[in-house]
Length: 143
Image (tube, rainbow, N blue to C red; front, side, top):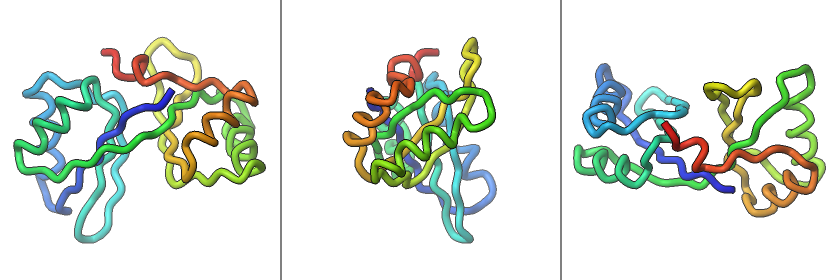
């Protein structure tokens, strides 16, 4: 039920992000979801891709600093309070959200949230116990 995410550390300069996307496009790797956070000097590009092992290898071969992180994908009800229900369930059980980002999958009515938790295994147990839909990685990686 965990999802593999790659993180790419980028200098904050024109064209650097385009170099990442070109590298992945040339390797025929599809970007399924992404988040970009930056400071004045560097950025962290977080990606869910169709083939995380190959993506990590080709990016490293092209001079990028790449890490791998385990995250959790959760489907959120598209209604007022949908996100609050998930977040309050987690916080009531002592799980901290380190970061999150959202995207919409083709053919799915609800949004998908990507979470990085301080305690991933405990978060998974709580989500399952409260019948909050977890999206398996294989579903996200598919093109």
